[in-house]
Image (tube, rainbow, N blue to C red; front, side, top):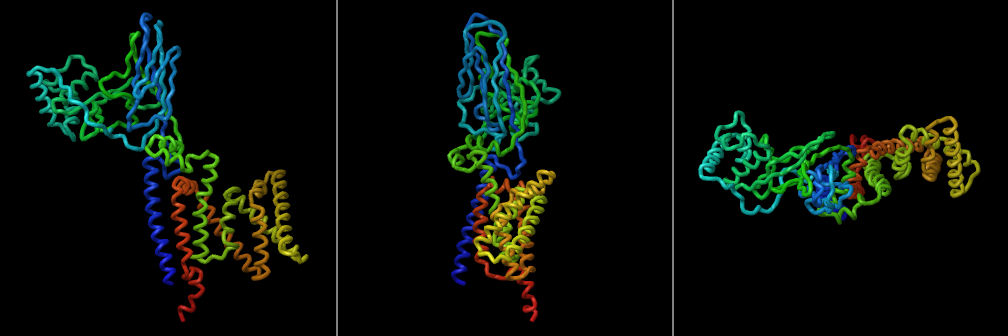
Length: 508
């Protein structure tokens, strides 16, 4: 007993560590690799096309510089492509430079990229503190008016002075002091630049961010956002509402004072964006997410980096331990006697391949026919090995017959019989016949029925798409199942069926 206690204690400690490791691993995979708990969960993948258009002047060499997404917590780039007929292009970390000799007429350049949702967060971008704040060259009177505007804006609702200023700027009607400092006709960029100058008086670093709202089937021009540096990170603000954080489905293309597009050797330049959305399974993006994270090496040595065919094989192997756990529970805890230790597991595997109803019908038909033949053969008093070999051959002939009948009469039940493991079926028939001879037909029938019932229970577990997905995506759970099975191996108490069996003794 003392030795058994130490074994249980040791296995219990290992089980506790395995549970903690599994919980952390599941958290890590869902947060950083984008794994999901549902096999049907999907992610949006956006195809974004930037169309650059300008008119070449025909006199000077052409250079077009397009800023592209770099540090972006909202989306990650999955793929990129460039279409620029007659142009050379060079891709740098934050821009693409198109160049060619002089030409004339309309010029059209295209930059396409595929982006997907990034699971690491999208509200802020951590960065070192910016350099010295550039303040506007205003006279004393203008500075006094600006400070008055800042004072009035603090009366607005908001979490900080930036939100309050934006709300103050967009209120209707506009404050007279503010209106007097703005030009009669001002653009969204002019408005943001004016707010940036006001915030510089409060020593708040700011910059402009340009991006696009991802909307399927739309052709849009880039939008402007205000970005402010607070507590070690850049925060985006909607210049219309003052809302903090990156809006949903908003892709930031460029940050800072530099323009989104610069063209030399041409005039009337413009850029517009077209978007198209596609849906893909979240698991299909896991490899790319891992490659973009800091633990690429860890992913390379995981089963998720294997070819798809090998992954599909391991997906089924990953779910078998939970089926084995059910068999152990049924035998050691419930006390159900089955035909062999893992016969139910083999039956459930066959049912998965054939389908539940068709597989069940085939199994019953093959077993009944096989038992009938086995009892006929018992009259010949054959030795064990030849007898089992003969049963195997008869099982093959039965499967042949059922398959031919199924093909000619389009009976799918018979066609499914080819998936049943021949040796296993023959062994079940032989084991059932021996039990029939030694313990009688009642015990043999009971063991066969119990094996079928447990096999059906295991089938509904391992055939469940959610369970298969979880056991494959988070295969460290098999370590937990292993230790639970080992702990069950130390159980020496009564089984549930034995409690009923020995109930009269308890009463006495």
